[in-house]
Figure 1: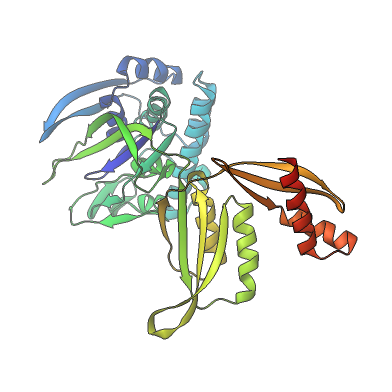
Figure 2: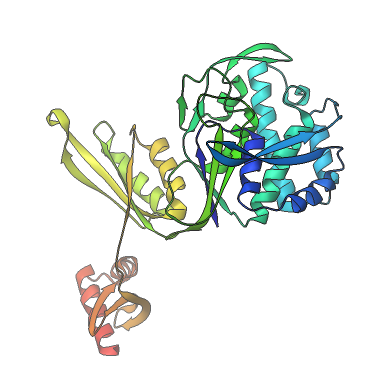
Length: 377
């Protein structure tokens, strides 16, 4: 299962957790799991209307202890929570601590979570991970993050909205600055989104949940989560970019690296670009689960400023690779079937190796391999 986080007016930790409860995760199960943390708090939910009905989550605690990262990690480690939940929770708190440390110019060990509510934050983050696992959600997608403006009062004094830590956590993510005169995306909401891929999935919708925010806005203060099964997880994507300012000697290196990273194919084509400039169209095919890896390579290794990608359909022949004995040696041959039609393609590297070893023209190795393969069919 996957979930798409539809950011209607911003995101906070309690809104995210509330949306998961609204989508069907049991509050009793949540309480039972969170009790394993050994903290003193109560959770309450209310159905409230903000144009549409949504779930509002309230966390009550008399606990006012100031905790640093080590304290929170110990609480998580000492609990009997699922090990996967523990690992992910500690990772999210580490990201949160690093962001806070950077913007305030202190070490991670000196970061205290007082200003964002230690118990609230622990419940929001750990509770969200528990709910995600309980709902069978293995991957998150999200729309761009909406950010407000104005001022935030905290222990450090007056901070600008969005909070500096929020912006730090959203580096490299798509954001939209709005004119909403208050904080609408919190650091806790931002760190939860670090688990998400910012794109629009194709899915069969199974559940929908709405989490309500506490602030009164001029628009519905809601977060929507859409849960379902992803369609065609193994879909093939075409990724391409136009380049006119890169040393052509670099292309073979990049293509090799893309193929090793999981691209199914990669190639270049000469193109005439705007203003009559001669350029190169670098194009590749990649499965859905290799998209982020190949995009990273393209941005890091080429001079491109942007990519285009889209899903493509493809038909494949039934195929198998078989070893064929020729008079020059053994060569692997790819055989494809389409009805009664058969396609035969000797593997280049095998043919090349044999041609080099025997001192025979490469084309003869190809013809011999194809002839022997046909004879074996």
